Amino acid sequence: MVINVGFIQYTVEKIFPTIKSDLKKAHMKDRAPEFVRKTFISSLYLSLAFMSLLFFSLGKSGFNLAYLLIIFPFMFFGSFWFMMQYPKVTIRKRAREIDMEVLFAGRYLLVKLESGTPLFNALIDASKSYGVSAKYFKEIVDEISIGKPIEEALDEAREYNASEKFKMILSELVTSIKTGVDIGGPLKSIIEHINSEQLIEIKDYGKKLNAYMMLYMILAIIIPSLGMTMLVVVAAFLALELSFLFIVLAVGGLIFIQMLFLSLFRSIRPAVNL
Image (tube, rainbow, N blue to C red; front, top):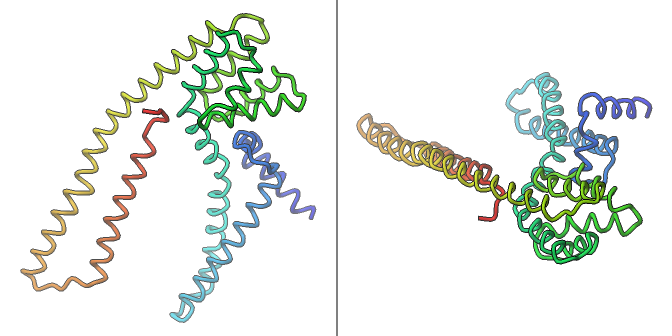
């Protein structure tokens, strides 16, 4: 037990120093040592299952058992590192969700505040509005409802928020509370700045898309089509037989390329409601 706790603490503090803040930004309930412990056990089970599958699949073909002892550490640490990235994946997902509606959420708050609605009531209305951003405002409202000061709740939400754009809006709200100045003017400037950033992202996306489309046409359409045509012609001249396995692998390769480009196009798409 002592070794286990020591390993967890060392992993949290030395190998993954940002895991605590990442878990808070991802809004995951597990504490850092508990998350690392679960990840460690899951990686161990996954590695053992993979080793067992490999042993029973290749054992009859004279597969040396010593190879498993060499592969196991790489499999374990690879799966452990991969699973430890889950909070960062969740953070990126939350950031894209918020960025998709941050402009509309900011405008909604601005309209409410300029109409004379108190800040807390504006946050409550925003938490009941449509869209994904409502649940993030509701998290802030829930913290305030249980007794946390509004300034502290907004400051904590800003610190552990996944979206940099949403942080800018929360920063203005915190600054207005601390200084007592009117939030209307600064918040409007922030919204205009976010709007300008999104327009730039859309223009950059158009430029990237043109380049990637050209690459897609070459690698996923022209080369496979001409390559398969030339291969069939050469095989006919040389009397080569194309096996069913080769055809399956070729089709599988084409599907992999298509999925790869589809994932690439999704990853470069800006988090903007176009």
